[in-house]
Image 1: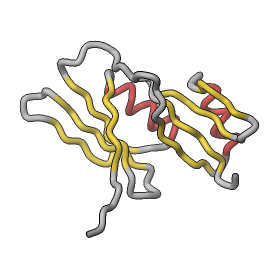
Image 2 (image 1 turned 180 degrees about the vertical axis):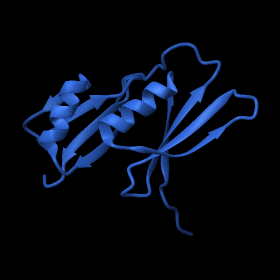
Image 3 (image 1 turned 90 degrees about the horizontal axis):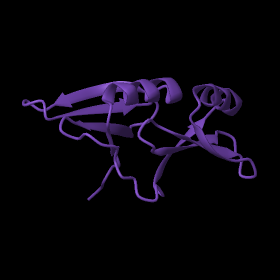
Image 4 (image 1 turned 60 degrees about the vertical axis):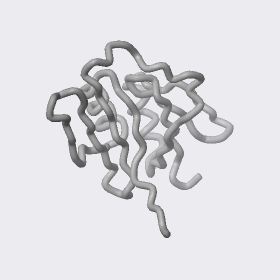
Length: 123
């Protein structure tokens, strides 16, 4: 028996804002969308076009408040080939929430407060 890790899910309050963020900040694109027949939820799968792993953004029609992320100790991580350009983009976007210069990495946060680690390719 073999398992293949294919996606992570995060719930988002504003789907359009989140998709725009992931497209701009990480170069991701929408791979597919699934919407409930009654419009109660919408799943949007994003891909980086390099690997097979995707992020599933789940929007729930009746959810009306920010998600409780607890201590927010869970995060995603992305490797980038041009760390300096990525850092500049994220600085301009105002989404850098933590930097660790000693380790040579930083974190950005998405519109819902999820943290994303940015790691240079040749670290």
